[in-house]
Length: 458
Ligand code: ADP
Image (cartoon, rainbow, N blue to C red; front, side, top):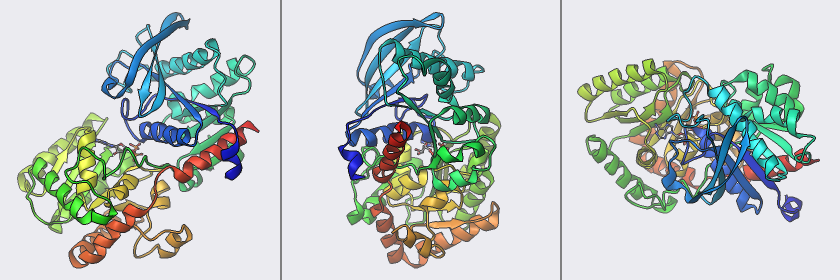
């Protein structure tokens, strides 16, 4: 990679509809921010173009100001800018009110709103004379960038620009994704195993020569147990036991759980079919049966699933008030305390393009218990079964995993995990230290993206 570092800086523009922490729904928001920061740290110039939602969390935008306006698509578009986590962000606010909806997703005309945004973003670059080397778009929501660019901008001012398209989740908007796959110069998805799992999909299969699986990283400054204002004691791998004990007590205190030295299983997730809802429920009961504690932080976009969990919460909070707490909401600060205070983070996804929760768990010294799929397979190596596979990656085994999508699978991993906690505490504590010392940041994947950006330019 030495040659890449010496080349002149590239200008990369992300066109995206999510960005952590100001407009985050899931992992896509995290990736836009943390990949951009990693690439910027390699001395490249990165800008992000985002809709100016009325529900933006503006307290996390520095130097937020109105910049200028332009006209396109039958409306005035106001441009604001500011800094988010040290990144330059342009916010587009069409005066037709498309982003005055009180939410990011969830309008009947989401496809129209985001299609309009994508075209408006390209028009912004064109009208103000920007010539980025790479425009990077993400999932169905900014997929239109790829074909709008091809149809309307290749022959205008943006002829040197290349389009990179990343699939964070093929489940959403597969038609848009097929079109973007065809029109982009390079395409990626967020782990090598997921790239193989979806290679046969008709949206992907014709384009394998330009398609790559690059694992996501997490931002070690945003997720840092040594400097985390939401946890009681700062810790590194050196004092992980002490730091996690304090975090567990604070978590028990905050959620009204019994303050006891019990194995604590955490779940932090969107509650959707993808995330293995039946396996999550089974794991809750299994953990309680093994005299452990469970904390679930999750919210369901589908009101029926939300209702179902409200009922489960009511049941558990009466039968196991001292050992189970379900928080059915989105709560970033609480997620930090759970990552730090849990012994295990459970991720039993049916499919998982990359998964960030298992990576964040390890950064906080929590042991991942996962289903072997997609990025979970690429990042979690079972202490009993995956020694060789881990070694091939230069890693120590770091968690527990299972095949299958039934109760027996979950039990296979969870029982071993909980037994290790009860029966081999010294070994368990050294495992916490091991996972904390593994590097799941963007250090390596950001170089892979740079190589891809360069290849797109050739
Ligand atoms: P996905 O993008 O499919 O939702 P990922 O594992 O890639 O799954 O990313 C999920 C991100 O959202 C993680 O950063 C996780 O901590 C966060 N998250 C999920 N649910 C919640 C919640 N209820 N409260 C706070 N953060 C959450």
